[in-house]
Length: 352
Image (cartoon, rainbow, N blue to C red; front, side):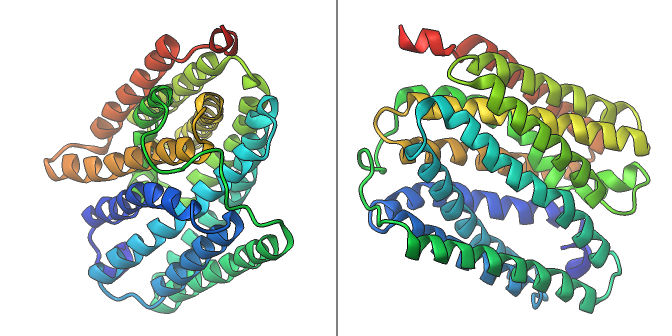
């Protein structure tokens, strides 16, 4: 976005378009899963993501980028809701948190490499470098699409879920969704304004943040998967949210390489740990439909990221500093920690 139109304020708007489209598409994804096979839905989602990534290479205006962002948001929503539904419905309850841990680990491994590489390529500052970056991303997405095609052709067709995906979800899903909403607003700031935050800390490549962030996410995913089990949902979510708060504070008070890396690692660890716990809790209380529960929960995540992106753009427009903005979202992560501690029960309480 910065290379195409040179407007830092458009960063938040661009990411907000992506996440708001994903929010709406989460619920549409549930409707789609009622009508086509899970693996086929995964193929469609991956095809849309591949097309969007390739289209970025040839975008020349803010309007084009916003449209591509919307397509990417729909593909992302369909793919992720489908994957989480397939995991939740095909994994024994005691091992759901472990399965989500594995999913998060593999996602984090990609973050270890690609943001750093992509930021380095784009930093060259030429149209050719910009095109190369997104064509490489599209090529990587082609591999993912090929794997989903293999899954579609090699696994039994699944068209029936526990109950209809659409409609009202279980009331208990509201608790983890509210908690994850307050927690993930922080991620909206970090994702959409990573170049600005990197610049404040004297870092030329914002991908460094996500390399440290992703490495910590791998550890956090493993810890969240093993600690949560079929109990300790609230405790693990509380600890994860507190780690996010502790990770933001150095970015507010200090600058420099050490601050940047320590903050990225602490925030990544906290987000992964809390997300695994809250996601597992959704699976535990989704008595009517796993797919519906995952759609609502993931919509809460995307809404939070959107609020973080749009909210930051708005506050910066009012003349706030980035440190002040980060302070606001540190407080929101603190609210998530307190809410998880007070409202998310243990596995033992669920069974009583």
